[in-house]
Picture 1 (cartoon, rainbow, N blue to C red):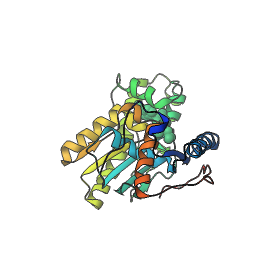
Picture 2 (cartoon, rainbow, N blue to C red):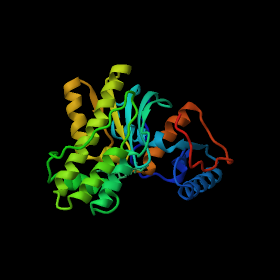
Picture 3 (cartoon, helix red, strand yellow):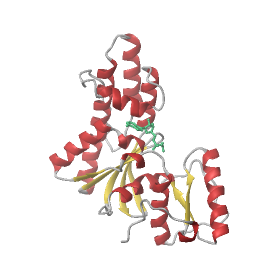
Picture 4 (cartoon, rainbow, N blue to C red):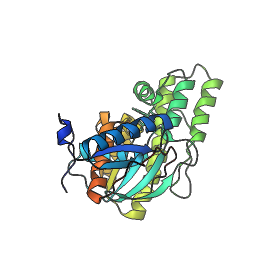
Amino acid sequence: MKKAVSEANINLSQIDAVSCTYGPGLVGALLVGVSYAKALSYSLNKPLIGVNHLEGHIDANYITHKDLEPPFLCVMMSGGNTQIVHVKDYTTFEILGKTKDDAIGEAFDKVARVIGLGYPGGPKIDKLAKDGKPIIQLPRVHMDNLDFSFSGIKTAVINLHHKTPDINKADLAASFEDAVSDMLITNVEKAINLTKMKKIVLAGGVSANSYIREKFDTLAKDKNIQVYYPELKLCTDNAAMIASAGYYEYLQGDKADLTLNAMPNLKFC
Ligand code: KG4
């Protein structure tokens, strides 16, 4: 299948369709994007395509990896979601497991705030952890199924920091990353056994994390599978990933009309 254009200087006359995300997310931001896209599509007389934000995160990978094709397993790790998704085709998805409480990015951000790193916490924990070692024992929650729970590890780190203010923060950050990586990889191994998929795709802001990437690279070698992640600038929210998802929805014939509206709680498949 022909791939979406990744980066190019284009003018309005070269646009075939206009895509925008209409959920899930914060209603104010969604309304601005949806209104702009509707106006642009109407004025250019080009089709309008409404895209699920999470589909955009997955499809960021098609921009970075021209050879990537479904089916594969996607580990969706963002500020608001953590899911293992079976990507059966470009526009067909099945959620195999998801977080029962905090999203992984939320856990990164809350831990970072409490240990004094500020917001957004993910990149700051990533940097600090490089100076530390994962030597502090932290609890791992492993569910019977493919779901996750990150609130326990978050609270454990926060409590430890309050009880032992002199604790080495770099070691704490490294140990936190090690514990969440363990939890992710355990469930991904279960999902591999269940689906027999040989390709694992990371998506969402937390897929920028260097320690998590290293752990998945090791998994790839151990299990003889392929691991993909988006280039750094496409991990966190961006417009290119929504264009990529819009491209595949367009090929599928999924078009919206001018009644398209923001849906802050839009479900993913
Ligand atoms: O996907 P995203 O841009 O927004 C949502 O759609 O939710 O993800 C934002 C999240 C934030 O929680 C941020 O701390 C986290 O991604 N993040 C990282 C890193 N870069 C961004 N977490 C861990 N390590 C990073 N390097």
